[in-house]
Length: 142
Picture 1 (cartoon, rainbow, N blue to C red):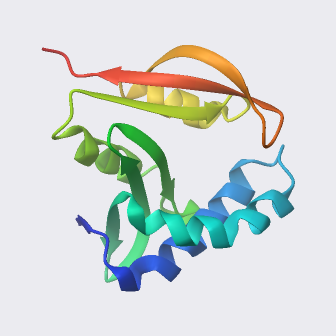
Picture 2 (spheres, rainbow, N blue to C red):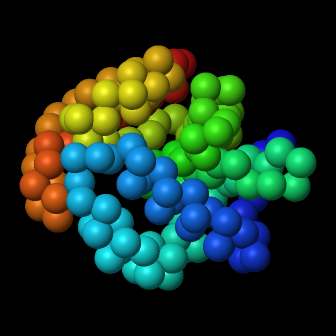
């Protein structure tokens, strides 16, 4: 079930955010994610967030600001079950286009976004990590 974020969800989604970033981005020192934890925890509630709940447990979430997808995170134990696609479809419902950034080395995420209609439109260096990022865009088919 997908529902809107509630303030008491914050610790659960931050646990997923930190854990999945460290597991997925092995090419970035885990200290980077740990050092950004408090900042993200403070600003995340300003985004439009939807959580995916199974048996009263949050197993994934998506955050979006206007048309920018800040991220989709799904607990490792629930990946491959369509949760990420469901969350992405939720934010596509009322939008004609979406944009996001993804690290070039995060091949699984790139393939996921391509499968869901996103196209790479440019690449740049993330100054915080010195890693190459792709900017990807999705447009609703009219």
